[in-house]
Image (tube, rainbow, N blue to C red):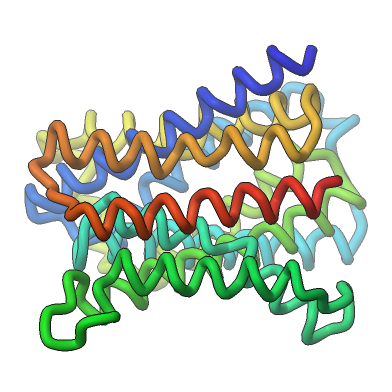
Length: 289
């Protein structure tokens, strides 16, 4: 069961990594990251809605607290998708994907502030390790030749912070309702938020464009299928294993970017990426234990 669960989480992570590449292709075609984010979430919402309606009576939840946390998760995933794509646009898919995986550090810092977790030398060492990795990845160690723009780095870190918000919201909401109900409500809130932000005429024009197939594929891989695989997989494996195999996403995104999109990474950037991924994996494994 554990092996099957890990396999499903790996498949979900590969889907997320590929979705970043598809988004990059759409941005090269001139589409705005907000529209790309909206359709990624909208297609995902339709998948979750079908899952939710398959057992409506069992899945429906009346709790106000559930809806509050689910909406918070929706705000987090809206920020995550949008800032992730903005990070890709401003830097590269490899940098954006890696910076997004600083989310566990944000979770840790928030836990310190609200006294949810106790501060230890090990945890601060992990935070320091991630900061060193970010410095190497972005080139901030040499202000005269920074390899990643400030907006790109800021968007990537913002995606990580939004991801942390989604994690908090999803975990809290799932304690009151089922995962399929939580995902449906969260992505419903997501769709409303981004539809209000996006240009309405441009949003509708996607439906009749030649790129509609790319948008549907992005939504299926980047939200619908991937989240279903992840939710099912996480039930069949322990959290430490899931946290480690989920790191397949930035690796997949980096390979996609380098091989198919022509992105380039220096040896120092690759080293920074490795420092971040190893540190986050060790931290996640320790936290799960």
